[in-house]
Image 1 (cartoon, rainbow, N blue to C red):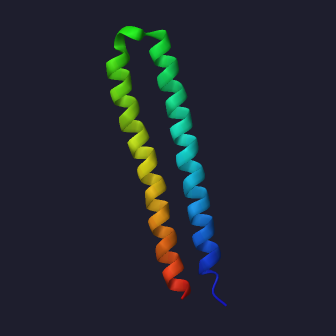
Image 2: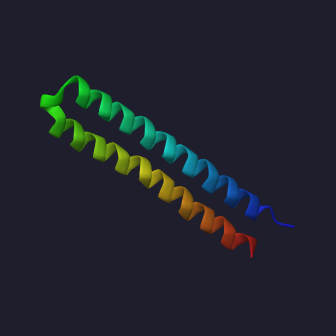
Length: 74
């Protein structure tokens, strides 16, 4: 019996959890920084979007890894 299914589930679970936490923390800090310094809102928003894109790419990477592990289970 192969445990690749379990590995795929753990990979997508932790990957989604990490991406969700990263996006949530980054979003809260962007909102806090914009509230503290409204004049720099455009620069803060741009940096915040870049941070969220990198966090989401880790979630997508874990999704791809989960599919690769699932393919090994067949």
